[in-house]
Length: 256
Image 1 (cartoon, helix red, strand yellow):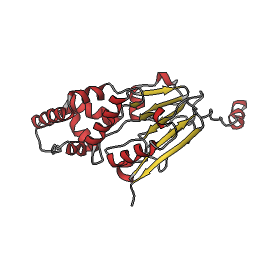
Image 2: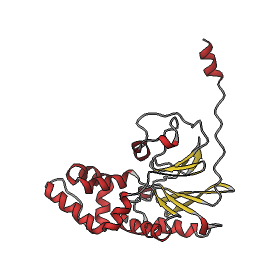
Image 3: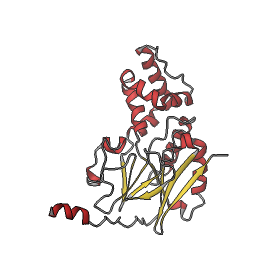
Image 4: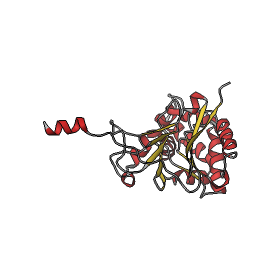
């Protein structure tokens, strides 16, 4: 019974101090084709102190579901090319699905197209896949998308990292297993999230910022920073503004 008493008398874990980077870091939630909200967010970021020193870290899922994936991809790629040390985009599961579609249209096309890929195709002026189309039609669609994306943009998407870290702040698309060291996370966990319930808090001093899971409002809890507020359906795009002075959130709402 001693072990049972120890469980009931264990003190709750105390969260590690929030990260305080030397220069601002803005972690931007899942954009999902909402170029309108992204432009508003970038304008708001430009009003922040030391905005010209800030690193912009996109958590991935730039595309799919929303109306202008083509525009978002072009905008973020251009930002990255202009200042690659300051604009970082991580790979999300939707970028992974698009690349899988290009690699094997018949095997991966139906899943991607059903999960927002059809909106991405439309944004590039391509007709979405229909159930009765042949394998050859899927291959043709993949080739048309490949041409629309351009080789340079495909190369960029292919090399997107799964994680960005500075000090005690780490960013991945779908978070990180709190029971595993941050440098030992699997690609599947960082792209798709947990398959089972995980311990709520890390035992180290790392705070993990993530998208992927839609929350009503961006917030920080249990060494996690949540920034996906479902822009494509909620009309709200959120980001975390992390500075030497602390953590705040920049939220854009397209609601009228």
